[in-house]
Length: 590
Image 1: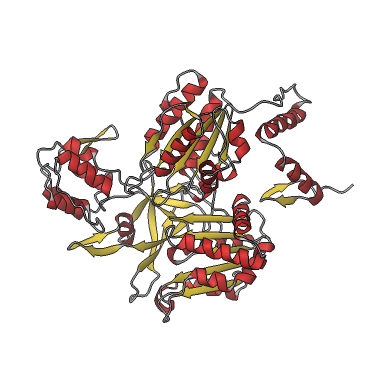
Image 2: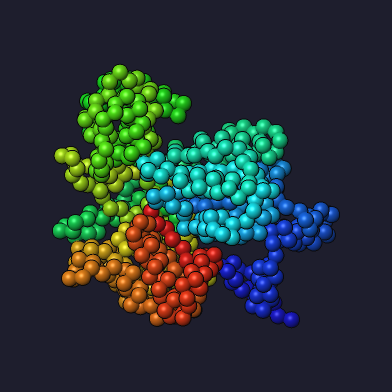
């Protein structure tokens, strides 16, 4: 008898022939969570039976905790894994699920539901959380009186609807009859301390014994591809190897290709990952703000339990940029002023607020308490470590503009844009994004949709596939303002197309003609071919703007599937959802 062939099924290599692999998939698909847990224990027992007796889980065994995570950039997934590890260490069984994979039966069978979810855009759930969100809020929502739950909400207080998705999950679970295991905890962009405490206290309640938050350690990623030694608090000081302007001088945008050295860092990453750049406010802007404050620059303040001067804190820890309604309200309460800006805050910064409404009779500790933390910036990797070892490449749009009579600049983009000296270094750390990955099967075709700087990860994808000799077809949709001035990486795309690495290239330049043309129109125009690629197993990737581009592209894909698949709207929705669940439709949007 010949050896069984290795078959790729749902992006996982398995040692079965095709017929047996399909049979296993059909069987597993029919099992609920408890049955899968029993089968897993049974198979483990049969493997270990020769060396030692192994206890097999009872057929009705259920995990004590079901962990659901809804993540846009990977933070919630990372926290869910840390929570699962902490539960395991305390002897509490758990099942961690991406919200995209959660079914109604998971909710009905759960004993304790631990929800970790971020808020996306203006109060919306992340894409991968949307199906579960709709289920809970729809007419088919399950009765959950048997369930106890806890919610950890991640958000960004610069948005008006801070942690809105977590709040809605919390309220709806209660509406469906579930009982709170503990109160909801809301985290801002600097979420680590609050998340650690939530994990520790939640585990304590389920384990019926105390857990110290200091013992909640990061997940040991023995099989992950991104080193965890470097973090925001312990970044790698990366030498700048190149800082090249990609757009023409007459372009309305300044986009840079930046190459950083990670030689000697031991950092490993994959295409699809991102790198965080540690932010630092511009010294001139901090000094201008200090001139308006009634405090000396060296006044001591405490930040995250550590002592610092006020100037250092404003440089490295606090956001002194764009205003939002929440900050204005906190400032009004602090200063007891009733007449504060009631019109649009568009383009206004903290310095404008203090200049117009001076700070008086307020202590420095109370002042810094209302400021939000300075958030790191994540940039999608534009390089393949296999093609360019010891380097990471980023594609960065430099933000500079005028507002309210002042020159403004992006905190991190200006830092990167000015890093042109021979000895320039940038503080970076890797950020794993397991939800944006090339298919495991190198034969699978891929479709990449990335307008503007959203094209960055697709440069990494093509470099990776070329280096590996992957034979799958590659199709890129790119869009920007003008062909002459804004065609990012034009020479590389055309060279890849000439050499047969990039099989199709469709572009849309919105300012080159009378009518504005965007990538979603090109998608509709090529709908028949695109649907044929999907039938052939293609994976679709979308990267870029979350507010307009991503919804417009999704609508275009929906129309393509409806038209060329002869489906109604509901069936087209299900088609795209199935692609997401099969990890064949992935987004990296911001």
